[in-house]
Length: 383
Image 1: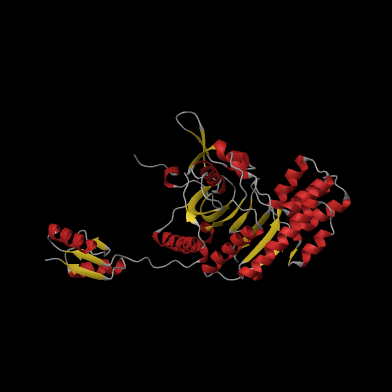
Image 2: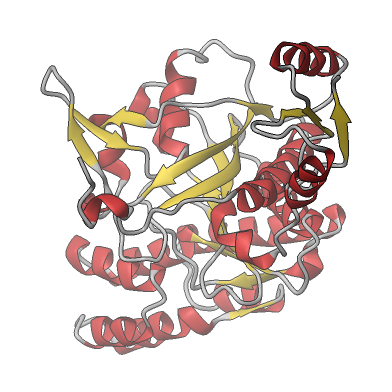
């Protein structure tokens, strides 16, 4: 039966990858995962499908999830990210492990959003079991080195802390509804939405002005001293001093020059509690690296542990690299006796060569043309 027009298309936000595009993606992923392993991170993998009960409580917009029913009537979800599934994995199969755990991954995630891509490849790390600022600095430095190692230029990382925003909300006595709305528009960097929400909030004038400054308040360590003058509330002061310590560690790691403090960073998943960061590269108007600390998530799975980590949106980086000429086989084997051709192919493959068996090719001229078109280095005629 001939396919309808819809059957010839792919769902919105999904994409096919051609051999040369796959070659770029696999090369980038291999470089990054090799670096992760050099920093003692071990690779794991979780299922593409999770029960919605696992991921839904920590996704602020439920309609971002792709949902299905299984045969037993349970609601399943395509994973929108890896942090929550890894928390489930650690809290079940790895709960007796030696903490801190350093874990890494490379996998596809799915978000039913309005952005260009709804399916994209992520590589990332989770450092589970340490509440030290040194752990935050390690994952940020690793993220910076991962992007630098791909050969990208003029990249920029921004570092903030959820505690500063939370402290302002506590000091102003903001109710939950307004806080959630403010956090949402700030996380999206929706400046019009931020101003509208702040002006309609009924908050004290001083708090309104501070909130309106947050999205634009970035720089070096000097901005932290100004923040200390905003409030005596311990949550804000602790966040500032934590940021200061992390930022100074980044100098020891040799990456501080590529990291700016940005107090307007808020993450779109509800579990973030501490330092948060984003990485940008020229030509892409949204973060290609997102990460931060999430010290409360593991308690929800019955295994309280502090944790921090990040994800690199690898699929969004593909267009930053030229497509290579896809290498063909090492040798094209042809001849008029099919059995002899098969045996020769098998012999060469046993020697570790990449071999293509020519189909419908018996003459040298035809074989040479086929090899040229397929970027095959050598031809071999079997008599």
